[in-house]
Length: 110
Length: 117
Image (tube, rainbow over all chains, first blue to last red; front, side):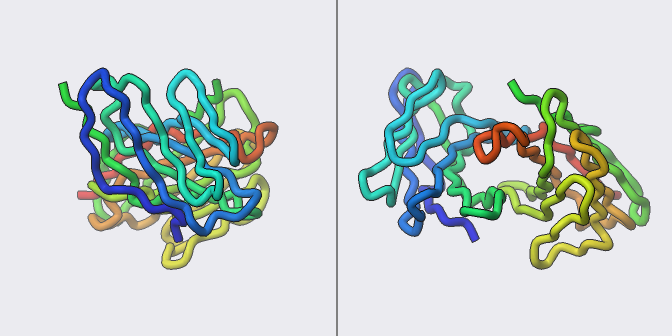
């Protein structure tokens, strides 16, 4: 079963920051959080991952709370091409399996 | 970056026939590959995990005799949908785990849209 909970949908104005929350309250100490997105009819695309420190790359920033029970993916300046379903995944230790939850459908509005 | 090639991107087949989908890691070795199915407006559902040179492990409720998985090399896994029926129509997606990058090296294919008529 998916170990994450995300809001089903969000809207964001083009050019503004999109903040996508994820709850993973049952996460274990050595389990990473991964974020992927899926644009319509394509395979998921990797965005970012983290363990306990905040992370930033060319696509996004990942903020993980101190207790690691939740995280937020930040797209600093959303564009129309960022419209997609965003998945937050916790990789269960020892299984190698990504179990996808329902994700958040982000719509960036012009 | 790591690339996974999935073919075909779409296929239409007649009910009762079999369809093979290929998933190749182009620039890395994938000891483990995963197969997912996705129905419209739904999330990805893991069907099975395949490890190179061994039998695939299927998730609960997935018929192993209907969805045959072969992972004969470190760069190729195939999914064969046998005796396909209209209810098998779906979007099938593979994922490959880069042996050298471990848990931080999963790459997904672009998916195969199967329509059974």
